[in-house]
Amino acid sequence: MSDQGAAGGPAGRRVLVARLDSFGDVLVAGPAVRAVAAGADHVTLLCGPQGAPAGALLPGVDSLRVWAAPWVTETVRPLDDAVLAEFRALVAEERPDEAVVLTSFHQSPLPLAMLLRLAGVPRVSGASVDHPGSLLDVRLRPGEDLPEDVPEPERALRIADAAGFALPDGDDGRLRVRSDDSAVLPAEVAALDRYVVVHPGASVEARSWPPAAHRALVAAYDRLGIPVVVTGSPGERGLTAEVAGTTGIDLGGRTSPAVLAEVLAGAEVVVVGNTGPAHLAAAVGARIVSLFSPVVPAVKWAPYAEHVELLGDQDAPCRLSRARECPVPGHPCLSGVSVDEVLAAHERLVGCALRTNDDSLRGAPEARA
Image 1 (cartoon, rainbow, N blue to C red):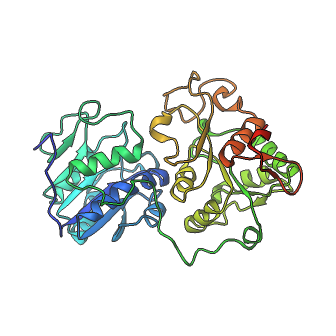
Image 2 (image 1 turned 45 degrees about the horizontal axis):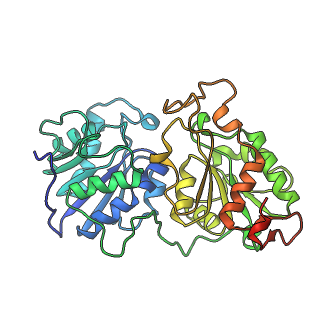
Image 3 (image 1 turned 90 degrees about the vertical axis):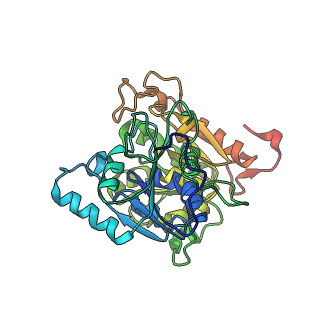
């Protein structure tokens, strides 16, 4: 085993890249996937059920396989002989020569590395605080030869690089998704000259701006004459209906990931919390007002994009707690963010002041509120 990494993986090999958790986690792995694709003939992306829809959008993926890992919160299940046989069969079908296991700072690659070893994969790379014994051929040590205060896309790229895979010349390492010609904007969105997207949902309550605040924001945009498109998953239809009210366009549960990407790409500004669609907005180059709760560090998980305004008290008592439910009465990290602050962030992103008539933008920078 080499702690320092390999000098390079031979071209023409079949490589399995694993990222087993959520939609956003898979999106931020995209640059690393492209790096592997630049040095391999075939890339298999192994995702969990939550992340697979994002995996289908990533450039560089030749085959996408879905497997529910027993140690991932959203897919927890008993680890038994049937699960092991299922995994062995998947690996046998894909025939990888090596695997690159991508994880976040609080995750271990070792459970998957063990299964990959048992399935016969001869070379496995990953980042592990714990000594991996014979489970990893290439190991980065978080906090030592792998800095921890870096954005997640850069962390994944460092793991890929240690395995011998670098981005090709001309690739800036930003998030990207494939274009999909079949993804058609909903008619009510396609008819708009301009609009703002408000995405009120998040996977956990601790990362959410209150619904009443989202609804007040939609109403404020309506007073400014700016159409608002409210997006959300099928399970968030009640929330999107509440937030959209009578003035917003409610797309809750009505967009595939590819269509959502198109909706986000066309928005003047996207207002979103720390959730998968924030990373999708980054991948399509949107301007983002990020309502970010500090339960996880912004340096790692803020949208990895050029035009981002980060709102939320990053020094609130919940800081770095990784809480799923807010541990502080009143949810001060985000409930203290006002509608006016979101509108001011919008102005900074577009470089113009918002007005209360249909022209809605004032061209003189000195006129900003």
